[in-house]
Length: 256
Length: 317
Image 1 (cartoon, rainbow over the protein chains, first blue to last red):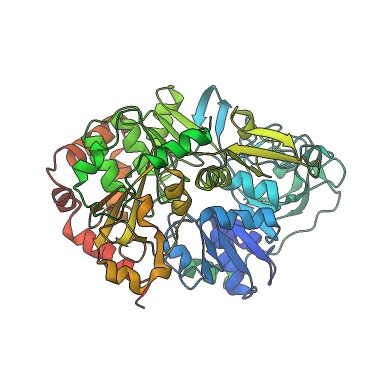
Image 2 (image 1 turned 180 degrees about the vertical axis):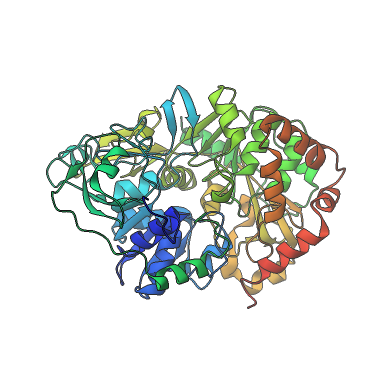
């Protein structure tokens, strides 16, 4: 941010990614910003948005100030349509019932591959990260939205470890590997909105958030971003969006 | 490697599956599990964790237990730090979003003192399901093309003999023991689970033996009034232990939520020096208390009551 914004980077992420979700979709959300943004979308413009959690919830309706520590606790199920086993909810991805997978990431590369397992080599990691959880399943089986902070150390040319597959090495390599469905759709960051080139499957910059310019985004990216000459600007989070968001997360558990 | 079908059948045949009462103490149940056993842990992250059994195994000085669980949390840290386990098969291992990456998981895995064997969450589920079905593997469509599968020699990518499509075969996981906590069961082991079942039904049917802890032991009559709530049949169960607050400081659906303040204190105590912090924690909460009730006493009445109040709000607005 070049000027002081009346919202945090996490709040910006939550609002911008909530706007990508459409009423009537079935979204499989991870904990943190994805859970919060999906809930925000549900409250703002998507009363018919169906939220799934890997703990085994269909049709979640998370209550304000009652955010769960993961997607596996009872808070995830309040006023839901159904609870089922975690294997069975994950199998809904494989069966094709999920429109959008939505998660965060520690590290992403130019083809949208995500790493949440190892920084450094797996046999001698600098940092062992928590691992895939359902991330690999979600990214393997459905169209993905990823929300993450835009930092050079997170946006790298090649991830150290492909935990959750994007377009692998680009082109049709994802399909060749046997992943017939899904793929990266959007990456939402605190600087802008990104997508993927239809042919090469390389990440491209689609829009800039208020007060951000393209060279700033490039400077925070560890690979060359495809960029159109005239980039649209996103609309800043509205007072209403921020008010609902802060009502949902009053203790800033996810939006610190 | 999955068990052969002969071995799987032999293990089932040699169990006493008669209709009999199986109630025992926590210590007696822990004594069933030998060093080096393969143990599947029920629940997920901070929900319906069989904490009392983990507590009892650690207190009994168990070593080299190979653990598996859909998603792992602080119980995994305690198993590593106590030396009870050096090998955890799971999809995700940390505390929870608000507490950050597990310092104990990092310390033990980065120094190669323990193994965190990472499968996708669905792969863990399919492994237990194959085990429950009595087949050596199941096919699935995730993990292809990733480095997760590249780390797993036991997972096989194949071409489907029917369609020619690429599939991943994951091997059955038939743990020697399943440790599962439920809201209620009878003395025979007919177990009712409220709320999220996670992988526990498959885990129970996959395991060679099942040890249940339960918030309450109820009569068989009560079970029979709601057979639709029964999720694990008595003949799959080998031991029943009544342990109120048996998941604390984790949650038991509809009974109590996690003890968030305790977990905050636990996470903070591990920040300056994770290994010393968790040794002190183990001493204070696992080794010093003489009974589970004394352990609960150290967690504190105020926090237990608050967790129980929050837990019941799932049913009472």
